[in-house]
Image (cartoon, rainbow, N blue to C red):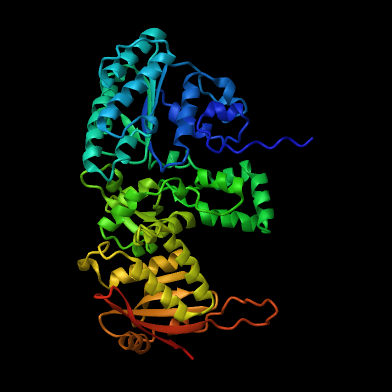
Length: 543
């Protein structure tokens, strides 16, 4: 008799609920055992949102509460782990009120009192949250005659939520400092401490105050602790993969390759362990559509604003960004570094690393198509009139149609409309230059899902922008406050087009015996700073 298919654990962050409801649990208990094995431990793990941190914390809670019956059939149940019950304090900072520092103060009190209530322990509600925290630890040690386990999920959420408001973030940090420092003074009464978060913020008193806190975020040993490996994806979701293949009329291998292209690629250490975003995979299997699931759960407004604040050219992400390992070791609210934040938040990931003169440097890039396309789309929208949020999305489809139809008149009409839609005060005049116009071109073309190269190197120079469809190649040279004729002449003089000649077009008609070469178009553009738009263009096809 065919066994009933297990449900997908969409939205389930409780390990006990997941097991009781018979949902799929990708067994990570062997990885978890590596954390538990040494005995006492104090750990910090940074991972992007929606990556399973809360489920991991809940699993640790079940282990320390000695709920072994929930682990039947899992790796840990048959391991050498010695099951024992410990009192547990668990706080989810994402669920604590934090809109102001005063509310955070009261929210922390409520969180501690809720833990005390579960243990039938009475505390003095008039005390500060830090003193309540200390009193609860002492009371639990006395009640159980055991050291206490502390699990804090999303420890930095009260800071992250106000990252665009440094003053509020600082005030919340001060409240957290006072609260977290209790773990240092009570370290002798603690059996195990585990904190999760997105970023390692300095001056929160955790990393400097808590003795022996081990940051395992970049550890090879724990690189696959969260997220699905390729083996796990194929082992735990074979029926889902089969259903997806059938619904899209693809083979299993074609389906696996497409899932990998969209959602795989996260790497959290030097080890080449790449993992899938679990949240996106589960929604993919549920809805059977390849979409931007993870990104849409929370538009990273603060990241978009940081990119624009630093005037960072996201075209550079096409080549890998190099960062020293020390860049990941924590930063201050007062001086937020863009690249480490993009990495912590999951918009960039480790692609490679190198060691020179005993110093480790990481190369960062986009993890996958979902993240890349979504980030660029939101950046494109950020340059659009906020009163017309749907304009950028509809524009993308119109641009796609124009390029596929080789309708360049329509294409440039659309581009002019888009430049005209950008509010005058959004881009200061001092920032208006060729790079700005090139960035807008790049974003629009990338989001339109065409192959785009910027600053493409040839033996005689660099091409401003190359756009490829299945049948055509468009070579752009951009000039500012000049003329289109000069731009076009530069392309021809430096023979930028030569490397794109004789590229076979994708056969649109399967009955044709041979594919034609892609048509190559040379496009000279002039952009006016005064008009903030395209003032002139010339197109010439290479014969």
